[in-house]
Length: 115
Length: 114
Image (cartoon, rainbow over all chains, first blue to last red; front, side):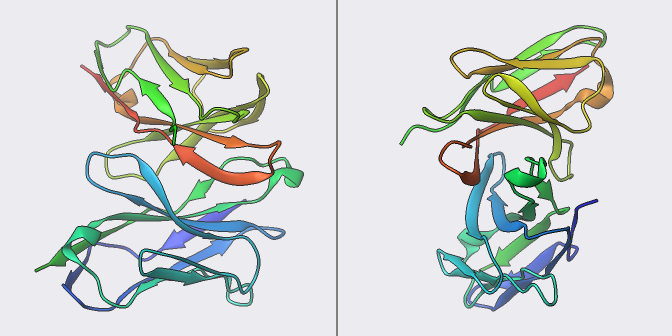
């Protein structure tokens, strides 16, 4: 079945440090890939997405590239801020034509940014 | 822009009681999903509906049922509540007719079973 594996947290960084959160997936076909962010006490917000191989999703300084050859979708940001502290979830969607219509989430990675 | 609305935001129930959670999708969205997120865990898919028909089923207990109504809102009914049902329940919506796979999440309902 489908699965998403994320690096374990928490990840603790100083402000302005470089961030990488690793995400790899297992799925048949050509899934769409997503990063969601969850701030304390809030719901899930879509951060960025990529729908085909070599696509790069970007938003708010975050980037991730869909790498089919390594089945990866690593999240990066060049300079993190305290306000980026949250839990980040990698997720995949296998598409309507396969009959599987739910998102499969990774276990989440908690990011803590210290001033 | 309109977002997904969930009610209530917080709910406290005792063991063996029943609970009903409601979800109002974004206007024009035809698909609704329910997820359960336990403390410190990732969201687990429960069930989804497209055009009022169940479209996919995940790890939903037999004690739970759900439906989507003609106005596209959805309700998750939970009976014989157990302590382990305490979790954050998210509803998400998307538009199949617009071929938009992005799921928009509501703020969640926090259910506490005592």
